Amino acid sequence: MIPKTILKPAILFFSAFLVLCNVHAQKINILKKVDSLISLNQFDEAHKIIKVKNKRSLLGHLVYPTGQIELLKNPNTQFTDALELFERITKENQNDSVSYQANLGMGLLHLAQGTVIKATPYLDKANSLAYSLKSVKKIIASEHYLSELGLKLGDFGALVTHNNKALNYLRKNKALEIKLTPRIYNYKASLMHFTAKPDSANFYFKKAIATIDT
Image 1 (cartoon, rainbow, N blue to C red):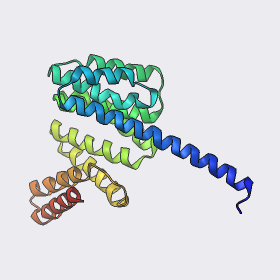
Image 2 (image 1 turned 30 degrees about the horizontal axis):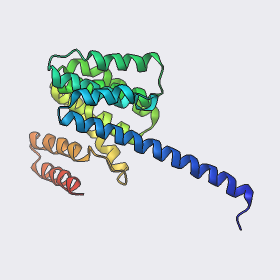
Image 3 (image 1 turned 120 degrees about the vertical axis):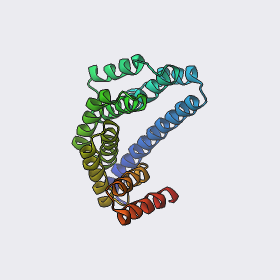
Image 4 (image 1 turned 60 degrees about the vertical axis):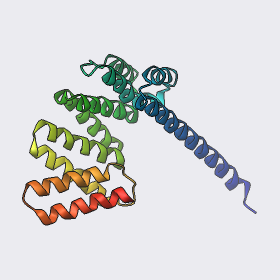
């Protein structure tokens, strides 16, 4: 029989774990719903959910879809709503994880719009926060998007540097499921192709295809 002194803390820990899992699942479901509505051009419905579900833990994740709605309505948008949400996060001194997501969201919006210079400070900040959080997934994502920024700016050095950093973290954390893995390998393969290294290019293209299939 398990002693009560051990059983009670174990039950409390397990209960707390279940609560965290439930909160995470709810967050994922809300974001999937918003994304689905946006893909169906139901912008008003998506915006209603964003307005209602803007709890503190979700705020950072909502910056990108808020701006996405604005961008799809007007390609020349100034991202007024997204910036309003971003500034709210900044003023409320949200934790680094929320700030990371907000900065990443604003950076990705500017990449999507083609206003790439404006993406730079947001993606740099997201990268800095990812390292301070010591989150491998966030580090890999921010390094990849900085490599994409380098590509769009025509900065070959930045493209190579950040792609290599993302790859190094992938190699050291093979057990992690990283959605961006195929894109990171594809960027590396393209770099090998353009630097006249066909064998290396084929190797990384095959790695990219293999990670899509898994």
